[in-house]
Amino acid sequence: MPEIGRRIKLKREELGITQEELAGRLGYKSKTTIAKIENGTNDIVQSKVAEFAKALHTTPAYLMGWADVVSLPKQQTDHQHSRTEDLIIKEMKKLTKKGQKKLLDTAREMACNPLYNPNYEIEVNAAHARTDIEIPAGIDTSEEDIMNEENF
Image 1 (tube, helix red, strand yellow):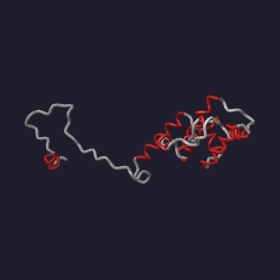
Image 2 (cartoon, one colour):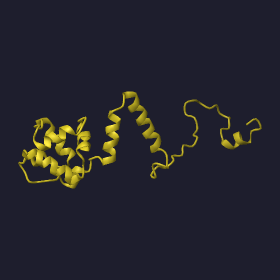
Image 3 (cartoon, helix red, strand yellow):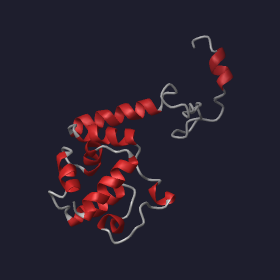
Image 4 (spheres, rainbow, N blue to C red):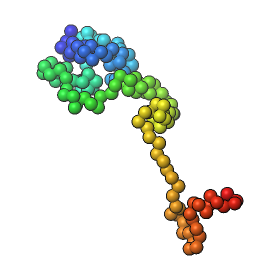
């Protein structure tokens, strides 16, 4: 097995990622390509080395066998997606543009629901005086007058 395939497999297993999950992160349709790269049947395209490294939280130099540094420092991997986020992205990629928009709308609605987002705080938007018109002098605009109005 070529060095790069062996190192990809080691990092993938170390992170607890399946071949199918890694394939999804990298945009492959199935785990077959990952399996072939790991066992040396297929060579990895040079342009994909950086993508593999990013998905596996390591460096291209490590995957290529040029360095023994296995992982990136913590601050460089903070932007990585969780497994759930990767699965959401994988499913989203299967949708049409219309489906993706609907998914985004649904996610935004859920983000504004305390049932799904415990950090959500309702923003109070109180009524304010209109600024788009001029109110003639002598007209009382206080809310107490409006609330006490008989026709209200």
